Image 1 (cartoon, helix red, strand yellow):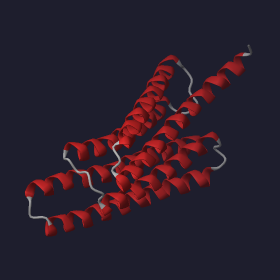
Image 2 (image 1 turned 180 degrees about the horizontal axis):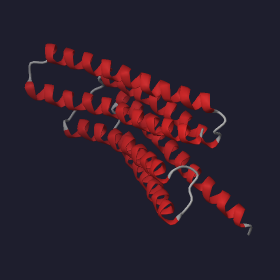
Image 3 (image 1 turned 90 degrees about the vertical axis):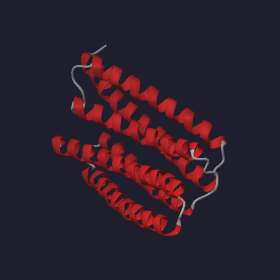
Length: 208
């Protein structure tokens, strides 16, 4: 086989794996949004399975990274991208696990709102990552990254508002601690999405 063809296949393989991991990340956040609306325990097993599938893609990608000398984008950027995508799915699972550990079984309107914003952010992340296949589509990629940054600011405001309401309306200190942890975890997911957007920004600047 032509060496140029082998090289191109290896290049395409990294972007394919990143996009597969992104698709699983998006599936995870969709499951989170559904769980927040229903608290259906059946969703937990789907979320666990999705996390394992995403972990396997990350493992394969890093294995390929360690075996490949020349990569389509900087090696450290690929590594950072796959690890931060993995962090999004891990944080989603942390939120649901914490709710189960804390025995929170009812729907909370604040978490429904947070899950919607997280879903919007991950969709913007997916759009930006999809754009890496076509570097000519710079504006669409940068616009998606700007949207992720905007949603992170929305998340900061939401968290502060929710914590303020929490401290004003709840007298049970244990309940306050539980909800504070969960709201903070939810906002952290948006922080990680912003980290991904910043990595993509850096990649686009280097490719320009």
